Image 1 (tube, rainbow, N blue to C red):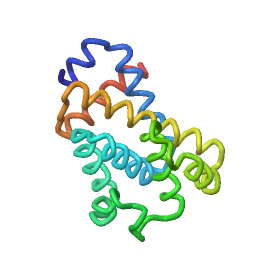
Image 2 (tube, rainbow, N blue to C red):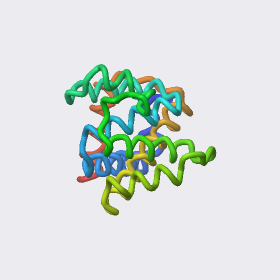
Image 3 (cartoon, rainbow, N blue to C red):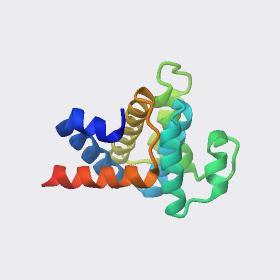
Image 4 (cartoon, rainbow, N blue to C red):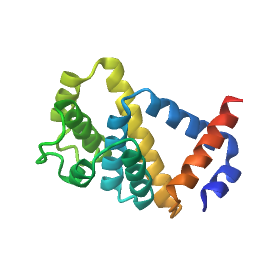
Length: 160
């Protein structure tokens, strides 16, 4: 199913989902959002979201080094403690059924983020995991510019 078909099949819900996605993403630091989107998409094996979010991260100034090292973020020295806490929380929630690092991830999260930020970050992780499942489930692979245009159009309609 193409993105246009998704929006045609369930227009109101897809508009609300997209608007919610954009609202949550805009509530956090864009650099952090991109890292979370890429990391969750790596774990979930979502080529569509990896393609889209790495392009968006580069567009916003993220370095190639940090994008390439994201899959090994624990060993790479180029991430801040705050970013490490967000990435650890992303890993823990995306791999929730494994449960190995949840308590340690929660402690790191609490040390670096306010309660409000913790909720926002958790929502962001849920959003990207949802998009990963939509893209993988419906075998989507969309050009990043096309996806951006669809999301913007949908958000405009949701606000109107």
